[in-house]
Length: 536
Image 1 (cartoon, one colour):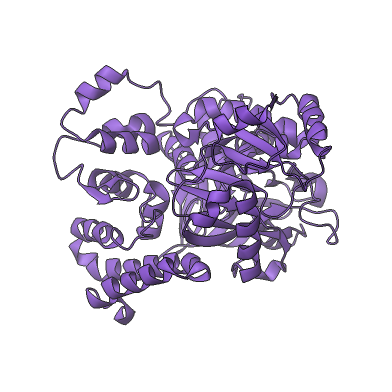
Image 2: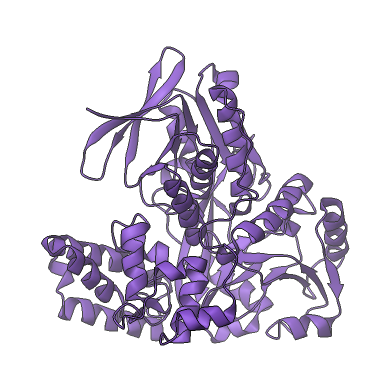
């Protein structure tokens, strides 16, 4: 059996796992990450993309609010190419508790969150599409963040420093030696069975943490709370808009790239259902109705898709509501808790606190390894977030390439744009018009960003995430993949069908009117030209 030797083994390829891998690499600790699917394919890639200021927790959870604002400042500095600093508004509607505004202002003051009360005219100047009946508004330093870009950048940084990553690889067992975890047994994408041996195993698998602990005979009850969201076909707001009331369904509208997102619901689900999620009709109705109360333009949009994720919460009681559980970080040293040395679980938290969670897990791993090196992730920028080139130099360097193409590639990859675009016309030919993804960007992702199929490619480039939902770009990207390896063209056809079926999952709950007509059009393309229903 093949064996891989390392010091730290990280289970889970979400933002926390990727951040932990990078933290280890920056401290010169050999590390390997194992992910059962693609990176950011779980909860990390199924949230609303909000870089919290902490204001949403300021009234009831000061500790979480403080963590959020501290990490908000750090992430805006080290991951600038993953962040859009939109700012955020908390607005009060006539039917809301008018006193909650003052409670929020006081909570922000306690947590150290900069906020400013706005006159109504100021709020409308900043966000013209607000509901004209709002009574109060508060400005906070919310922002938006691309979770796929963030996770991929952490992975890229770690790999360039010598770390290793195994995606589409299932951990089937923890290898124990008496009372110590010494490795994991895995099944790779081609059914290859192999082992990874190390001194410390870090369980960063989010809601799957309960299952990973069970492999060692340890109980760690998770509280699966499903959150559903819907996406509009264009961007209806320029700032994050929150409803100023205790957290409830449909109380936030987040702008992201070319679309806006309305979220979120919170529903208990059985742990057995975490891999079989779907959005229910009444969730969509609630989100659209409450989203329209914040931004009336929502009623004039076409809803592209609906999706949901599971919050990785650790609850003291199964009876608690998902919104009552603290979003605080849970770090478990299983030596102290369960008598199993070399095994750590990091859970809870939010996307905004991923770096802090990674630091906490890596600090504990260092204690076990006897390594005395400080964390550097708070001060070391991610690949792509280096100091930007002067505009004149950028214009000279990419003269002859359409500026819209340069701008969109720069937006997604930061200063790595220089490794992607070239003056060759084929390189900057557009593959996805909705998101302005070029052939060069697709080829860069295939060669550099651990892409194995079209679904992975979507997470690295946003290909297929725009209004057409892949109808006019998926087959072009598949053609590029087939061109790189003609012997695998049959496999590429299978990937193409899988990609379109995955897009359909999110579109199906919201198919009516123009969306339904467009889905028929997509079906005709892929059945008529490629006969995809006959691809096994």
